[in-house]
Amino acid sequence: MEKVYIAAGGTGGHINAALSVGEEFSSDFDVHYVSGLRYLDIKLFVNVDVTHIKSQPLRTKNPIKLSLNLLKNFYSFFQLYWKFLTNRPKAVIGAGGYVCGPTLMAAKLLLIPIFIIEQNAVMGLTNRLLAKVANLIFLNFKNTKGLEATDKKIRVVGNPIRREIQFPKTLESNTLNILVFGGSLGAAQINEVIFQIIERGFEFPVKIVHQVGKDGLKNIQVPEGIAYEQLEYIDDMQQAYANSHIIIARSGASTVSELRVVKRPTIIIPFPHATDNHQYYNALNLKEENLFPVEILDYNKSVDELSKEVYDALIRLRNARDWERVSASSETPAAELIKNEILSYVRNK
Image (cartoon, rainbow, N blue to C red; front, side, top):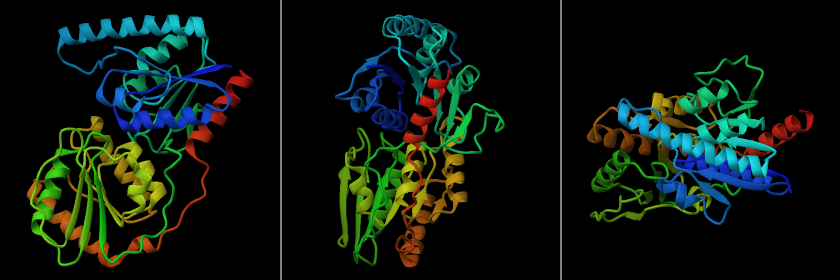
């Protein structure tokens, strides 16, 4: 069976996009993955054929660290060059993260078609470099900073998400169900905001399911009238979405793409240290699509200020009950579009 390699690492957004595309290819191809050695690289690539490499980022002002990282990337490059030379995949796809650099360049040197998936509204450094040599570029957002919109290699397809993420039915409940998560690794800022909101309490019944992230578990006093569930990681996101009325989240590409599907009213606090401030632009693009209510809060404000703004937004959204007025869309999944475009390219090559 012909082989396809998919590289991704670092964040749940990158890795879940890779797994989604891999699922789509798996019926016709032998799918292999390439990732790094970070926490989610190990946790999420389970029960699949994966090669973990020692690639490192090149965004550093420390010359010694830069030199060491370059050496590790060269080692990873030659490791993958030999693997591709002996296995000869039909295509190599980069779904995000600096792990894609040595992976796709090794394939390019062997004249294997390479493809990149840019999930964010601002193109990352690795993808900006790879865009110059990629055969096709798949975008989540039409207006992606760092790319010329007229580039003939560009395909705007949305972002690949897990097959199980679907538009959920309206949740019938007198209790306001709030889902909180700050990405796959959690978010200390959002956690503190939620702890303050819980301490303040509500005048109506509330249930909060809160993904606090790795090392984020904390014992807190929960007042009467609030049911509170604290989790390090939510394995079944579809069920979590289905059980929610309102969502509080960051705006990583994977989160934004899943929100497009589930269409629950959402309060977004973008990650303040995201490279090139891409989470803010992700959230702005989502809000401008006007698919469902989206409130974007200023991540530069203090926890006290954000707690008040989130609390007020929850009251507004509860009173509006907009989750009762949205419906599912019938767009072709991004992973399927990506597979079709890649197959069309390699067969006509």
